[in-house]
Image (cartoon, rainbow, N blue to C red; front, side, top):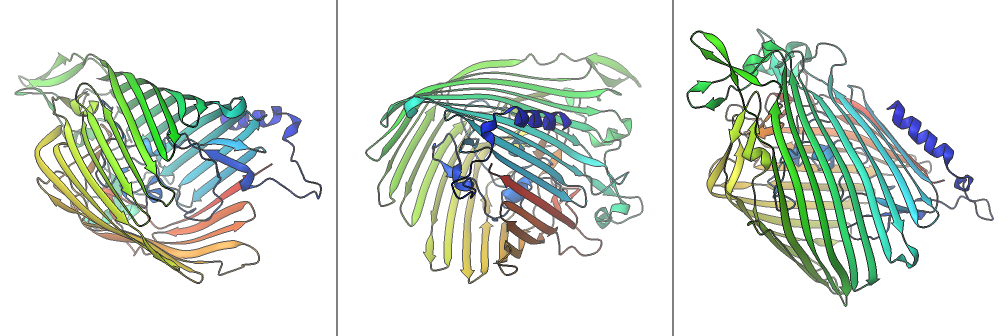
Length: 627
């Protein structure tokens, strides 16, 4: 932390004196959000920075998805989408994605075009230990160059099963440095960024009631205890180097390349022999059972991926096209600490040498493209495809009008690497799975009137050869699975009162291997500028989330995977938060009472045996400096 702040301070000190704020002839400040613009690679459209109050009190990954995700109930813990999602691209992937929502995304990276130096500082603090420090700085060097620095530090404390007042739960650091260069006449454009994520989890395995207490006692901190003693550590790092270049001949023809290098490492360490019963004991060979090796248990997974894309794109008379060739080379390996496990034999233990998996490396080639047509009246159609010669493919299309949109997607994709093979002190598998076939159809409409909007939507998913995780090994369901998911969004306004909500219903058919809550909901009601209207902009209101009971997937910290379980149904719950958001000039802030409806000695679960966050008062400030 100190090193990062020192680098930022040094960077600010060494900049030219031209950074000084520029005033117009009336000595009035001329820089603001309107002169601080950014774009993303996907469309290259300049847009101002967000200065609104909308959901500024949402600081966790789960809150930013409007609770359509599953985590372990506490800030900075592993998180994944609640509903089924097909992979973003075809081809081999690693499959350890429970921290991906915390990492900077190359697709969503912001590249700035500023008229003045811009600094944004955000601080969030919860009285029970949630903390987030977010500092972003960017400046333009002349007109062609812009450089940015973005540093985030987030951490949380354990809420149940604690041994001290400030037992750490998770600690996360992420950093990125985006760079933009634009040549003369705006023909050449280069976008570069480096990003890193370092997440350390202090694993508890969940909570259990103290001896002699009822099961509900896990929601009472003094009567709950962590399942794992001495807190094993899990660790994941992600590092990305990314470069995009394009040369625009004219609007109809642009040549571009993308280059990306990605490294990920996952590690898990265990040093306490009293945790023996928590871990699975896996058969490495038929009729022979092996136990993990103490006292030094260490799991290590390493993955490297290098990708190169080259292609063309352009716009011509309402048509937008893109076509490119993508190649990638990856290396994957998994191992454990030590070269022997122990097997019970003849009343004693005999060391057995385990041969680590040879690393997996492969080169893959893909052909991808898309074509879209947009009319001036808001009608449009888009088609896209990607193909891998070894068998993977994806076809997708979309048709939209002013009122409704219909989309479809068919995808045949390979199993993830961690679904195919893993070697560790706790689990072992070497699977040969078929590719999964996913077919989706989606539709939505928007009906709007004065002060209200109504958005019904529908999603249908058909899956074949779906792969799911169990406690011991991944499995594949060869039968057909179907998901039918209608949903409804509503937003309205009556003078200063605003209301918005969304509800999702899920119906499943087929084998019971893809478990989802039948009903989920989220809503907000708030009053805008009801107080101190002459002094500040404000919102005061309440929001709630609801999830029906279901057999939620459990979490295995030693593999960083959620898995199917049949022993504990997560009860239905409704959680209400009260919030007050405000803005005074360039300063935004919030105060929020989370889980305001918590009753004494009660709580709720998002994942089995992991009690979610207790009632907590949280405050945050976001300050923007435009000169």
